[in-house]
Length: 307
Ligand code: C5P
Image (cartoon, rainbow, N blue to C red):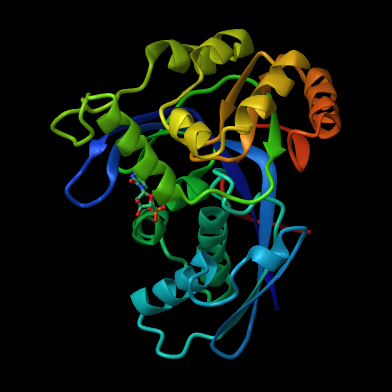
């Protein structure tokens, strides 16, 4: 028997970053948007918790207990008091690694769902969401999918209404960026600018009403105007060449360009699927990224693949 779970990547349509909290995290107004670029995690019975991975980035995916998929399997087993969990998890990786698209978090969410089905546990969704939040700030959203506002460190989710389908392009960089390093750079830039960087200095961010309206209306032009990422300056400071990637996408006809989450993947919103395919081809030819994918969303979160 085996269970395969498909799980989407995310882009942040808005990433509002508050000040540094005493616990080392930042309060966010995080509008998560799930896109069809997806990993698959297949769970089969095994001895202990073991991992394997295939895909163009497989060589940089850790196959030890630092992988969120392995940690998810162990956390679910511990929650249910399973003394000796046995599972092999095979990850088919399409989401860029350390790319700002929550690929590791997606694999953690997929492993929760896959092991739950393999072990016949029937864990209720609210419990899976709590376990997901223990694994990482972006893991709960990968369970839910669609479009949602994440508050707190990103784990307190409120699904958002969205109409129709939006068309995106993602330009994948060579090499990743460390999320904690990008948050630290954001703090450093704020400190350098003299505005302060702690949660007593920086107001708690809120979702932009214009962005929420654009999503609810299914209006890509209005959404393009409202896209915002408070980590973008930090990602560009650590990787200045990303400015060339952003420009190449808008020159090719994207409505807007922004860094995806903590980067270095760059995201481009386009008016339709045809433009997305054109922008992806132009980015691949531009020499400013390793590759580019045209995709769409929103799509559902981690689901067992049938058939
Ligand atoms: O929750 P997760 O393990 O994905 O977070 C990784 C790191 O990113 C945290 O240790 C922290 O440095 C940073 N982070 C943050 N504020 C958030 C989410 C993550 O500072 N809301």
